[in-house]
Length: 197
Image (cartoon, rainbow, N blue to C red; front, side, top):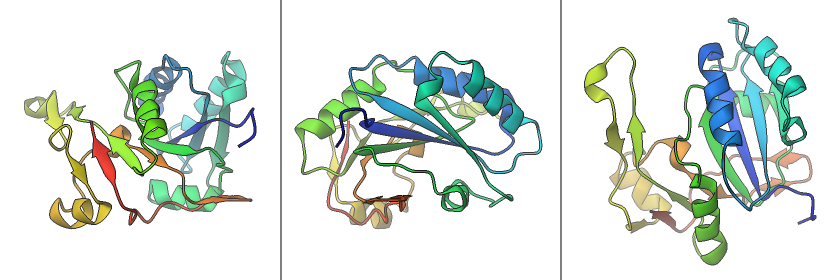
């Protein structure tokens, strides 16, 4: 991996998340870590002015050299569809996905998770518990979501036994095993191990 290549690519998918985007991006750029990372923002053809906000943020932010922006030519209906439509170039060793209406509270999230993966090459990913805040339904505010900390699962276990709801995607950092010359393919999540810390 080249010296200037980020170790982690954080892919932020957004569709009509204008009111949440700045807190989301600020939570990423507030990370305290020794690991170089980039932020790839993919707008899925929003109609609420999100794209204008993304362009302005990218132009004016002091970390704009770390930020790369893409827009779908038409709405794809999902983050996965938007990523395939825009084909961002991702050559980092690790990938994190974050929707534009989510944010990270812990400023050492990247540091902890990348350190774990760097020291445990037999694991393909790691995750953590998350808290869910739902503006319309205050009864779920702060609810923990995830599996027992310290547990180890194969991806097959996660997909079958936990019905794909083992944790929120904003908690995951995956080893990028699908690096290609022109970008990447999303993991099929059928590798061997993931760690829940």
